[in-house]
Length: 262
Image (cartoon, rainbow, N blue to C red; front, side, top):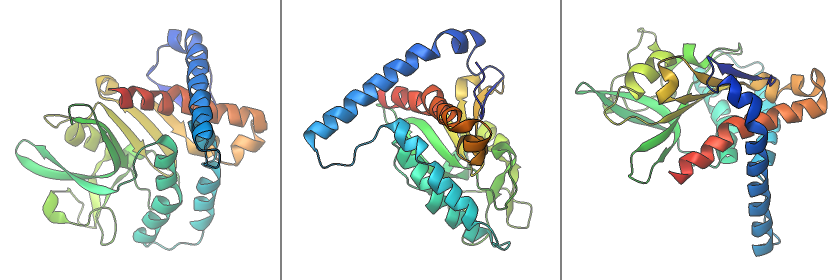
């Protein structure tokens, strides 16, 4: 099953699953969402009710507003970060149903404290980390793979309090560890790591399962295709909607249901 804008890297989902299972899963999820929306409207007819599918589709506006706002920005990374957080990261987490709470999270590795920037987190019933939404900040107008980005530690950027833990840098206020290294060695290297990581950048979303990460298996969502002009012009309006819907249903939202139930 080929889905524009979605890469099933190293078979995050098996070929058999993609060919035979998703249609039934999507139908069940859509039916559940419709029932929930109906119940909410019956309880509060004046309320603003929309399904997760509709909320994800609506992200096209804030994403394009962000891209327009970034035109002409200088090399000041704090302004890039402010725009990305306010115009896209916050609406994204709200659409996915997670609390938006940016913070620097300390992690203890081998008795030494490090820290990583989070946009949000979810714990399981035991209070242990289940999902971390990590902030892969891109301080330029060029698209980049989130796994190749680093933490920006310059004043007013991702790290506010150096005393919380170490961030290895290159001496120019830029982290020296890529997010691929941070996820492998810092996040999943903890004594009790989260099961899931959602790596969020302006250009891509990466859905990562700790149990599949060693084999570099992940889902990659290309936002330029799913939310940009290509969704309307290259694939046509119906295909663009279908691609965005499938990215929501097959990846992020179906996984949201599993995480919240655990």
